[in-house]
Image 1 (spheres, one colour):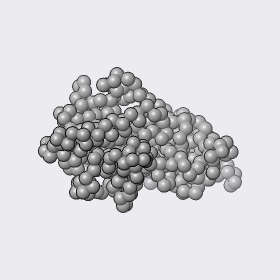
Image 2: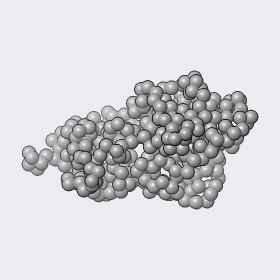
Image 3: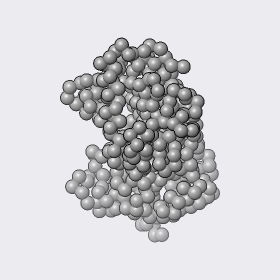
Image 4: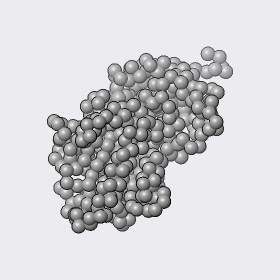
Amino acid sequence: MTPNNPSASLLLEDGRRFDGLPLGAGGVALGEVVFNTSMTGYQEVLTDPSYAGQLVTMTYPLIGNYGTNAEDVESLRPQVAGFIVREAARAPSSWRSRDTLEGYLRLHGVVGIRDVDTRALTRHIRDEGAMRAAIAPGDVPEEELLERVLAHPKMEGLELACGVSTDRRYVVPAVGREEYHVAAFDFGVKASSPRLLSERGCRVTVLPSEADTADVLALEPDGLFLSNGPGDPAAVERVAETILEVAGKGIPVFGICLGHQLIARAFGAETFKLPFGHHGGNHPVMNHDLRTVEITSQNHGFAVRGGEADEVPGAPGLRVTHSNLYDGTVAGISHAKLPVMAVQYHPEAAPGPHDSRYLFNDFVALMAARVRDPAERSDACPT
């Protein structure tokens, strides 16, 4: 390589190395390397807070062909620890484009690497599992870089939601007439979720991940929404009390992704680390009640442990409502007696298909039923 075209490398914790060229900001990026199978929506992927602490590999070979803009974002800035692509488009073609992928990454200080054999990398992750890795300039000694990788914390046990959550509450007003008030925990919420609720007549008060039961109940909400987010759900146990008390009062609860895992754990279920996670916009899910298949957008490295039939071990009140058709893992749950529903995937998509947006309507229907028949409300917290 010449000085004007310096090399870069991706080094995995098992010693596997992939060479390429620098992309975006300079320096070293450390994190867990995963792959995303979406063909479009790379800017939404970059700005998804669920990717905090991860080096994201895009399996689609050409990334950046329609550039970047100020509209296709799910948070204020990129959240990924690093970005890995096969080919980065240098001349984007879109009337909406305001910057190249390269310029966008450099502007926000995101370290990336291009010209990587992403097919070989993806196959390696599928075989060996997601693992810690580093993106670095090619002249960084491999021994030194491997030491840094091995010293980096593993994803298991990491509480990352507090690092991407809002530090103060804010309100997303209802579009048109306000029908309901939703309290929303921000564990790394994507902007699309509050927006879709607001379009359905909901005023959404977004709360920091550190909010407690009193903070939620003081709002007198019609429903509670638990967002997506990064890290290990086992490290966010503090919210379990809130979930149980709110649900016990008959207030509908809806969780997605990390929120789904936290609801399951609150009722006694276990979660576990997936070998390489589910990341992409083309994951098929079976809806057990409707006997239909939804193509879904997913982004998670942990899952709820399932059991026989539709049972959720350790949580007798819960039943499985959706299953991932790739590996049979739990993709959705509901409670037998309480107005509680949750899915492992992203019904708001962004990027991805819109097959699952009906879930926001289902949540609104639960709130509507409670408002129509307040006599059904219960003050007994489940055990």
